[in-house]
Length: 485
Image 1: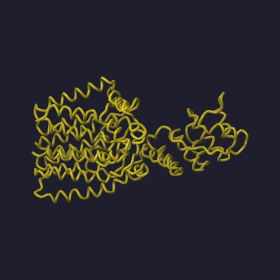
Image 2: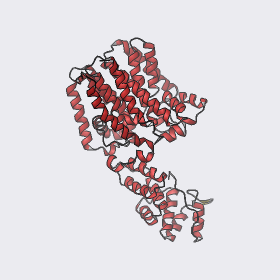
Image 3: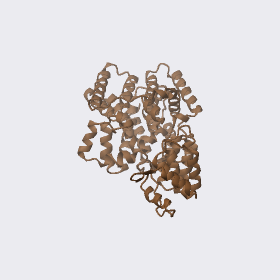
């Protein structure tokens, strides 16, 4: 390896990151960062070190104080500092990866693939994915420090585990590929013990596995592996419930090819192990939420880099690598647009999301928030026609069609949908649809089901609406669409 190779890989990685600096808070960034973490004072930030990410839901199983504290500090200045931090971490990781692969055949090839692979866009463009960049950075740093500074190696890996647990997997398999021997296992084990014991001390348990969905594991792993060689069409929603068979076959075929060509290259086997392990550790989340996030493949790209560095053919000059990197950089220049708004992020559902109910739900919610009510109604129709509709979409569809003035269409949807176990909000919007469609008797009949001792249950507008309906007057208050049923 030439001394300049690591710097070149870092420069290419940084160039890819530059395109994402104009990105905004999207998707989960609002509730997690802008509305929560960025508003914490010093005591609130310190509280992140004594509690899980969230009090309930998936985040209750995660203890990530380093990543959450950094997001809290940077997020109060907007998304730009977070994206800049992700850029620097990605460039530093590419630099370390080339250096750690220096004894292999083609370290620069591996470093460039990691630097510009299409799947890194989610880590560079999505603020909430900063923990993934931190985990890879600290995992690689721990291995690099192991021989000369074992204590600092322990500190680095502990910080990585407190950013995201996959740091331990990255460090372990990279060290295996480098044949670190007994010099690294003691620091690695010490960091893992510290990281895990701290989790239990603050009361954070393990992640439960959705055993009823174990049959989805082959599809999830196959599709995730396929994304390493063909991640297109690129979309933030990869719903394992509708995993394309061709991608699953490609993924397992790729795995077989990686095994066949690994030969006696220890680092290649370690890289293959990291590709599989990084996706395997995400399975509890995938099986519970059916979403294969591109950020889960970020550590796997480290494994792919190790494999390529082991079996690839070294280049005598740097120009062939520039030819490899330039098309990928052009891709990232185009991809950055996705992270400028939720509307851009969830666009192209028809061509990229494989009829995912979750993808159509999110696209519908974005249009509902933007007051594109007809588009939202059509998207909710598609979501409800999918294999697994999102909870509450029946009601939200009524909200969309009524708000669009399509009362007859809303009434038909309500009459053709569930008739039992309906929420007060659903009944209120159903009554609104019936009234708007001219069926006054049905509107009164539905509203009667909402009558209670203290008035009518349902959204805030239902009281005045019901009063007008029973007086046979035209309601003057237009209901405001809400983003929850």
